[in-house]
Length: 78
Image (cartoon, helix red, strand yellow):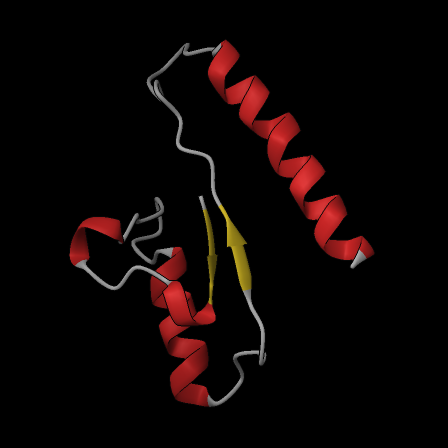
């Protein structure tokens, strides 16, 4: 998933909360309200299929990491 400032999901279903009870979208919203959100923010995300105890990285996530790294490098080179 790749989102920029103007296309960040706003619905509650997209608010993934960390173990600290404060998710990425919450942090972005706080930065907006504090006036400290950069003019351009790009968020990349990879959704894990399994996250339970003892879960290992699946092939799909491994491939997604390679794809995201390539996208980030391309973005930086622009």
